[in-house]
Length: 255
Image (cartoon, rainbow, N blue to C red; front, side, top):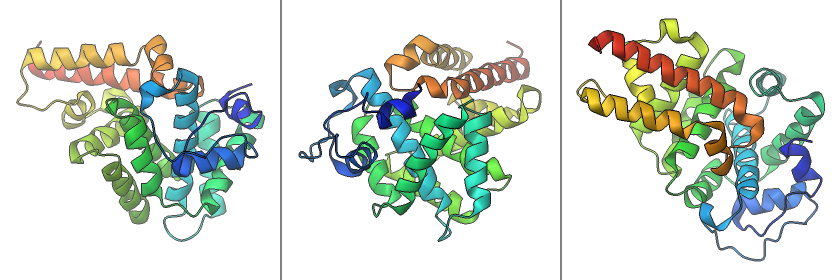
């Protein structure tokens, strides 16, 4: 049973306030305590709890992005299911559980920025997890082949509420582009953005950023920092994008 099934089955449960706590409580029939509005940071929860937070937050925000134009159409629901099937390799049963989360979040009265602000507190000090969520939102929004202006606008609002800046969003979009197009067509400009450096960075800075990202996206590290196993397919795609970006910059610089 994957994490979506574990959450609905009550195998994951803990005290959590805010909009995410309300979502967890709705999913688990009130088995999540929302008595406290205090939001602890990532260090206050176990790895499994943070994985549940990441999962519920991503699907909730995906529902808000899909609803950005005022409604959720069948094409958007189908695109989301295709993303879960093709990018996360989820089974039909797990996709059904994810769809239940999606529908609950779609009808939830909290704004996307409220979820994002709570994530900022929960994942403070771990901007990579926040950037992962934005990258995945780009992947979900573009699963139907088009990024609508309303979707782009709400993703930017979510990023801002998380405390991410313009360069973070550029990094996320470049990472998505790299995973979509493949390394052979990654532009030099996108390569720098994927590694979080710029053309004026020294060779040593580029190497250091590459090494840091490779360590960050090692499966064992990810599991301890809140990225669920269901998202390891995405992590593998990101690792490919990181190494492809490194290769592009090495060739460009003659390193």
